[in-house]
Length: 402
Ligand code: ASP
Ligand code: MG
Figure 1 (cartoon, rainbow, N blue to C red):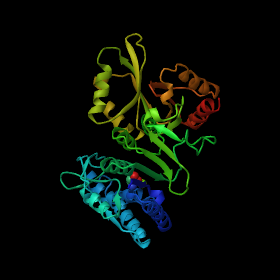
Figure 2 (tube, rainbow, N blue to C red):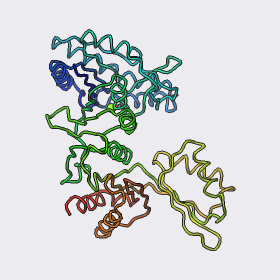
Figure 3 (cartoon, protein in one colour):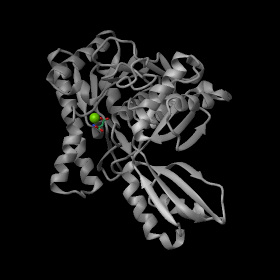
Figure 4 (cartoon, rainbow, N blue to C red):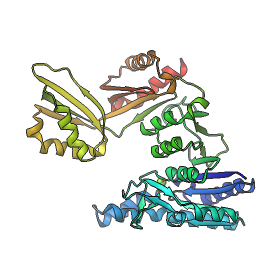
């Protein structure tokens, strides 16, 4: 008998009709002879609405209480979905993560799963029940409820698949797979049949909003075969697998990430230890820095610029200001009017022409590049935000149509 883990996102269960639709799909997999474990997200915009509710009461609520609140969204979903399956006459049980044995660390609002004690789930499966587990939630060693971070239900599903040794983990969402670019503004974007873990991980981290990047990390580590599918159609979807099992493509996808801001420290002394001083101040406050460039020194001075998540910008500027006597920059300037545009593809390793082709596409579209970063399987450029969508289209056309 096969074991299938399925995950349904918020849009897939947003109202009664959608819940019934999902219940029917689950029953289909069950009737085909599989054991079925499902992780489900909060309905529609529930999580955002709960955050709004919290803000009305306390803008600075503790992460512990926020987790207590946000975890309720998923508890609503599991009960409703189980009721819908009951109505279809199949044996089913809904479980919170407490009952399902999800042991997490104590990082409230961004908890990591350490272990799943699968005994209860296993017992339910042995009785041929369909098991519906609350996504996104965790339990820590203080018996507190935590959450895994926004979009974390994907990770709940992959963790279940890994712990239970599932044959496949199907992630159901409102798009029918992973595309070569965002189909909302790239008309000729194509759905991918498959993609490697590393490529998917890069795409997820670079702004393709299909999978929680930690879920991909975990799938790779535990060799969980993932499928991204639509809950509304019967399309095949995209499979995420080991790199030697996927078709090689020079460029698998083009992404845009608007969640960035650039900070430039102009006229910093050109002496050893400057970069260390600046970036250790930021890392001490847990601020992640992405792209970095430093100019060649001239008359004893240099410029250092870097990007951070847009939401971190106020904190960064505060830190730099608090330490202006140590940093001693002539000027500090920042902007949020930038975006990171990236190409990803395992086939670009050792292919020197890929960067040139990307830059040529931007040149032809008269788009200026502010910063560049490369790794084995990706190249990112920072461009003005107003140019970002055009940049994606130009690069996508160049690689996919040529
Ligand atoms: N409901 C949570 C969120 O909206 C978790 C999830 O959807 O995966 O972030
Ligand atoms: Mg959600």
